[in-house]
Amino acid sequence: MFSTLRKPALLKIYSIPLLVMLTEQLAGAIGILYALELNADILQINLITTVGMIMGISLEIPFGMLPDRLGRKPMLIWSRTIIIAGTLIRLLAT
Image 1 (tube, rainbow, N blue to C red):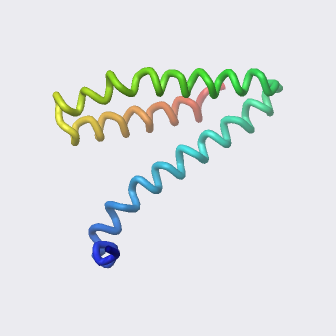
Image 2: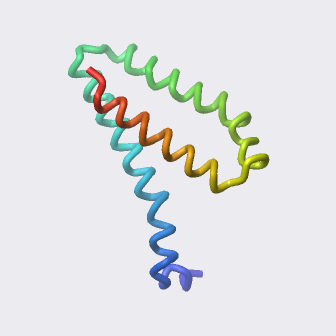
């Protein structure tokens, strides 16, 4: 079962989703702290989080059909590009 983890190329491939997940979680935590610094109350922070999750859930099925039509690799590249752009926009926002 763990024989694939002994191959360095596969370890690199397995580490990419882990690093992406950790950075997304870290960005979310920093976003909450930043909202608190801007004097947002708990209701506003929960509303921001809820809207983001509702958008993710409602767009999951339509965007889940795109890899079937366009291919998996292009969709992975575009999704990561959009995530990086969104993170940069959040970092540079005033």
